[in-house]
Image (cartoon, rainbow, N blue to C red; front, side, top):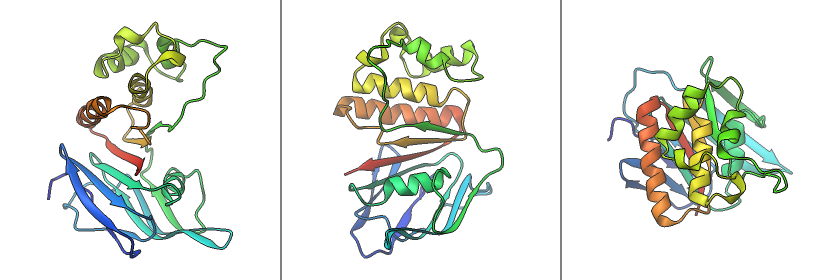
Length: 224
């Protein structure tokens, strides 16, 4: 198994399988219920986030059941499933935005998390340039912005309106903003939505470069 791989075993009885693309590991499940770590490479580093025996119940219905999940430094993990499979709920629990019905969520002390949302709602009546959008993030130096512009090859977009960016351009800008404070974990919710095939390939390559540059872990959630 690759050094930075993270794999999971589904026990919900639903269809699950593994696939690999450009050294990135993907875990595809039809429903997120019981997930446990499965034969990962040994690591001397503690996990950035650990979920233990997570259960979430909405209106007497089990949305997440007995989830065990660890996110280790410098790994790339993708959870893929259909709408209604529990992906968004799992993400909210992992980020401590939703308290589980039972179970434990532990973050490494001082953990920095960069988040790329699924959608960005901008008031069309208030034009915002890419440069202004990036500078709105608190405690960020101009040097950090310049570095991100170079890393994601978006320097030519600094004067463009955020509202007029293509899907691929918008994702690059959102990624640039998410890494400005050098997070240890980068979380992306549906990062390939609205991006064409060519743009998706480029984004996957950028994510791998970002992991190497920041030495961070990456967690992606996608719909099939």
